[in-house]
Image 1 (cartoon, rainbow, N blue to C red):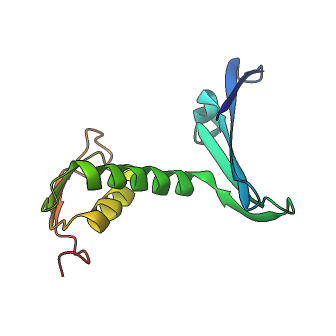
Image 2 (image 1 turned 90 degrees about the vertical axis):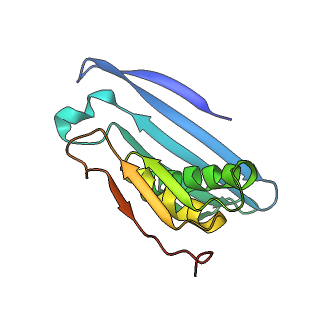
Length: 144
């Protein structure tokens, strides 16, 4: 379930978006990811997307943790990708091609190396300010 709310941001003459993503397990845990998307934030030298995750005790309603959403999101996205790979890729797959070298890339590499015996990683990015294509050996528990 995702709640999507656009709202005017007259200071920058553009709309921003508020996303609310609740989740719960009755009588156990609950949480909500709160994200703002402000496309004009580059003028403030800030990222366009900012978020927080509030983790709650579902019985008492008390806060168990407040997490910065970016680090949580990249780990969750990488875990979902590796889970899919565990069903869709060959069990003996030992090389990984990483397209892009952004914040998600290292998490994807670690997650895929946890489900496959990855011995060779090739990576590239089209953005000139990021590292040029490289190849590294990344030891995993499956390749030791």
